[in-house]
Image (cartoon, rainbow, N blue to C red):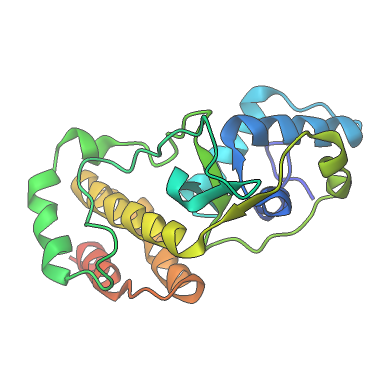
Length: 215
C-alpha cells in the first residue's frame, strides 16, 4: 500500500527495515527505489525523503546509535552517530525524574535546540524499527534480500531503547521550547507506544507534555 507521497506507507517502510534488521537512510532510499522499480512505478528522491522524514518524526523508524548495531556479528563500519539535540537526559538511568524534564524547559525555550528538526537524519545514520511501528511488507519486498547486497544484521534492543528514550526526551524539550502543540500531541502518543515497546517509564515526560498542552 502507498501513501499520498507515492511511496510505501509508513508501516511498510518499517517492514522493509525489519526485513534486514536496520538500514542506513541511504540504503533505505535505495531499497525503496528498487521496490518501486519492481512495482513498475516511478518514485522521485524527494518523495522517498519525505516518506522517511514522516516515519522518523512519528517514531515508526528511529535513528539507532552504532552501539546498538551488529553486522555479521561485529560492530558495523561507517555508520553515523544520530543527533539527538543539546538537551538530553543521561542514558541508562531507568526512570527519569520529572524535575529533570521540567527543569530543562526554561533553559531551552527559544534556543537553537528548540528549533531542531526531528527528522534531520544524515544518509549514513542507521534506522531501525521504532515503537510506533506495525511493520508490514509491501508487495515485492520479499525479493529485496536477493537484490540488495546487505550482510546479516542485528539490533541490541536495550541499547536502542535507551537511545529512543533519550531522543523522546530531547524532542519533548525542543517542542516545549518551541511551543509546538501539534508536535507535543504526537509525542504524547509516542510515550504510550514506547512503554509497550520497551521496559521504560515515560510517565514523567508524558505528564510534562500534558501540563504544557493543558496550560
